Image (cartoon, one colour):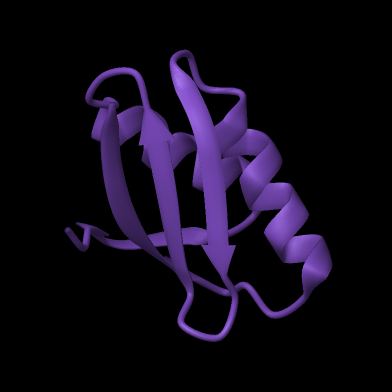
Length: 72
């Protein structure tokens, strides 16, 4: 399992959390998505390393912006 933390800009409410979780959770190999709304950090657990362009596209599709790639 691979766990990565991403900074996401623009999330302000539970709807935001659901939208981002739903889009990222739909990526192949994703096992879990945890969103920390106050910090804007999203932790994604997946079977293998995710393509950063796919992560950015999923976050964009949800209506938010990936900031600076992954944190950890």
